[in-house]
Image 1 (cartoon, rainbow, N blue to C red):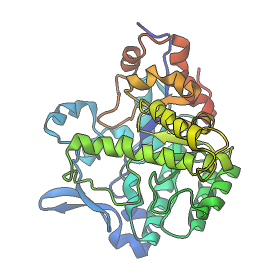
Image 2: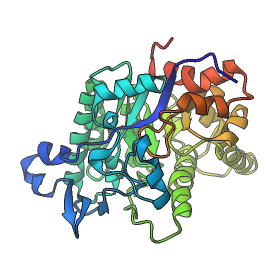
Image 3: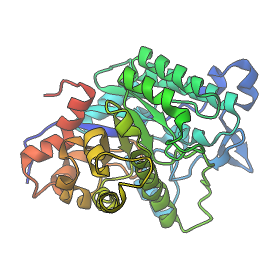
Image 4: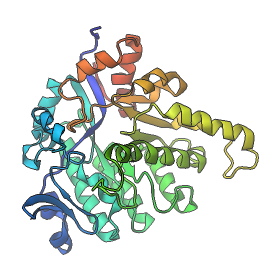
Length: 373
């Protein structure tokens, strides 16, 4: 069935940071250890101080052009200089949006997603400052179609995160990211000043997969690859969601909005029902005390993105259909570029067009204040 919708909004897309971004822009005292690509044993390798050294053709880490999809049969990704140019250049990105019927995209980090595992607090703060400046500059090419997202430093004093959130707001970035699994749990009163500032600023709070503070094993040798991906993209986000709601953060800060990115939505209805069941039987003694069932806070204050997620589409009415937002995951190899329209027509073939329009365009447009025809 052909849809009478010609442009979509992707609530989950990515940038592909230049390989010399941090080498050129970090404060001089950090430049010798700046994230960079080095030759190691004849292989170009991303190196981040105290975090990882990963081959740059890791198919899980690197954006891949449509023309390189055949290489995925061998588990090999494309080289940094060979990936889709729109991941690096905002003007080429706008052309790719037109090719793929995309009206606007929310732009999340690429390699920088993993930087929450950096243990050196000052080094992490500087890495994220550089990334946030880059995200601002990239999105400035067309703020109505390129929506940049900032990252908050978490290793140092909380005031660093608060100051960076205020700076991100001044720069016009549309959201700020926090680790999905912090070392200090989010229900700790330590975070209350940050939640209050974010609520007052009106900045949505993003939790994205692969952003835990415990260092991520990107060698993916500890468990089978498919299990590793499930852990990173679903299990850890389950923990994040349950701990934020059960910790009472949405209850204490009713104007705070959370966006869960790249973990899909098909699992959420079942988990919320499980949480509600426990709340119904035990809410009189469980601490912190929630005045409403967990699903109430999710439906009121959480938004979530999805890509290829038939179970999520089918169970949308058990969540809040107005808070669900499709994403293309451009330019990653598992994304829908350049066939997003065809994929949407396939995945939503039996869904009323008015509902499809909300899920693939209008919900995100309203959430981010976009004018999309």
